[in-house]
Image (cartoon, rainbow, N blue to C red):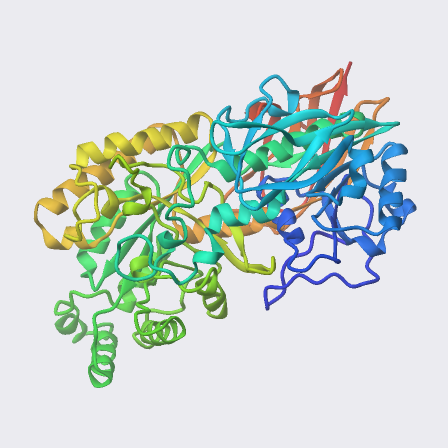
Length: 636
């Protein structure tokens, strides 16, 4: 079976008798015995990293014949039965590879470690610098969340060491790898999937607590004291995912090369997701912002809050807007309306921009979304697009906003937001970077590990954090030039070593004020657009970025076959055709002693470029989305 996606309720369900089909090198094994397993989130990590060549199966459905179809097994966290341990030991001894997440201690002999019965919670990961798997990964220690088991080495080698804090190394290995007969077995002594979810989504124990000194419970409250501000310049979750991916590539050396999908459209190393909240703004100011973005060939998402209006006045306004489209008398009405009309919005959408809603939820999450969805539609602004940002980034529970948004067909959320005292150090120094530890969109997971059909896209570059936009006293207080000076290093780091979709927030409101705020924000906005354009960074609306993200995630790598003697890797891409944005397929430049010689797409030789991701060198080929047959030829 292909990689599973959540159903309408957000829950992924594998039938008890489902058997994984061959044709992919990786098998994600869900340990169904653990309550609140984040096992399916490991699949979300694989898709985020473009490793779409995997199958998923429940542990209790497996036998040796099934396992032998796969070169590597990724086992989710949880306790095992004696029969499970025996099955996995036989698989590895016969030449298979295993990565076990927070393993059952009974796997210790296979993993080459002894479990000591103690743990460290919310520690740090420090890679061994000269280990091949660690090459290209941040050299600083990285945060993880949740418990890590203490182990003692028997005969395994260490990939990463456990640190009790950012600088204090312990005696305990954190990630290890062990050779057993013909195969290898790796231990990841904490639950990577759950840790990544907690890094990205904040501390669930702090849900509904106001902790950030800004009125109202916001997304930032989940991160106040949770993110190490000395590490915020590093996308820590992404770097750990790339370390996991490097381990999979290392394990593949004695089997087939692992192809991947690149993160972004075409050759882009970074994308800018351009958005702007607008609170009752007039159409001319929205038009001005969109026109600025269009000068760089880009598109933008506007999240709009209509001005309060009574039902009779709303009906009258719609009648007048309709009259504006009538011959002869239309001009009498068209000139009298400054607010966006359905005709304005249709024009913006036709030019590739997004015009979505920006709900207020002060009266309650469900009530707010219902009210603003109705207002949006009844004003003639519908249909409601699939991305959103909530006013004041107010947030309920750990993921309740995402759960409610899914009910309205919203599939990308931009509420996680870099702003306020949460990102200020104790010495009063402001920080910039990755509040959620990530520059990649991934679907939310709830407290039980269930995937929700809503992507979390962080907003990294925020005007109201940098400059005085709303007189809240929560901003850094920079000028436009100063704001640009702290923004461009984040973009430059992304271009240089941390591939990221950087969310940008430029409110429309300051342009309506027409004072010094408009000048400063305008200077910063233009500077950011100038800078990314100079590096050919695509400027996308959130809706465009979501469309690409969904097509990429649903593109499966199928029927993979490796002929070592001929040096031929063949596989098929099976996905939805979407001609708006291209994808790139990547294959390793080196596989053991063999080097890539040529790539064919649909039977035709194609030229390739080169790219390094997490220290692994790849050949990249740009393709249209949809179905393709790929062959790569290696020579000794």
